[in-house]
Amino acid sequence: MSYGQKLFLKVILAGEAEVGKTSLRRSYLGEGFVKNHLQTIGADFASLSKTIKDYNVLFQIWDVAGQDIFENVRMLYYKGTLGALMVFDATKIVTFRALNRWIEELEKGTERGIVPFFILGNKMDLVTSAKKAKLKAIIITINRIPPSNKSPRFGVTSIPITKSLIVCKIIAACNPYLKKA
Image 1 (cartoon, rainbow, N blue to C red):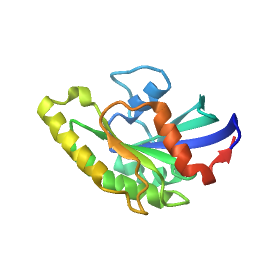
Image 2 (image 1 turned 135 degrees about the horizontal axis):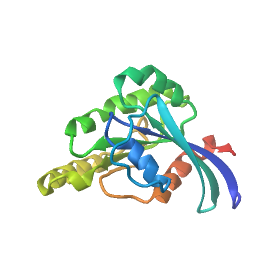
Image 3 (image 1 turned 120 degrees about the horizontal axis):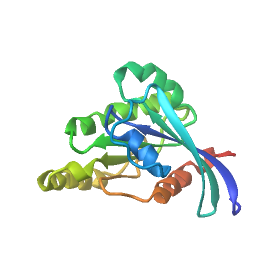
Image 4 (image 1 turned 45 degrees about the vertical axis):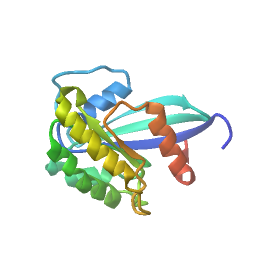
């Protein structure tokens, strides 16, 4: 790729309702935290242009509703997705257990089936030290499992990771599939 090439990158934020997907999207865009906001209905998206390494990226972040009632609608939003952030609420382990269902849904909804993703533990500031230790052990265990050819997972984290790192990893994995903006 030549320096400064423009790329279109669609990334999905997926996970159960109320895990903090909208807050993550707002944070990425520099909009700040809002304590009380309306639940996402269907999906919400925002665009952002960023220069990351050698790429001028037109970055679309799609925040899909987590309620079961929107499952059929979500499938429409997965089309064209090149990467995903699978989000769980660190204070509710059931949201972590639900990620398998979200990954399967994403694979069904995308044209390529397999999409690189990160698993993000959100709301870590609300978790006790003991629970943080348990989550850290789970994360270490998952990261030691080599990804299969069906799972191009990049990693699981419960700590803040740089936005640029996520985008760079997705760009690297999706190079053959990227669309020029």
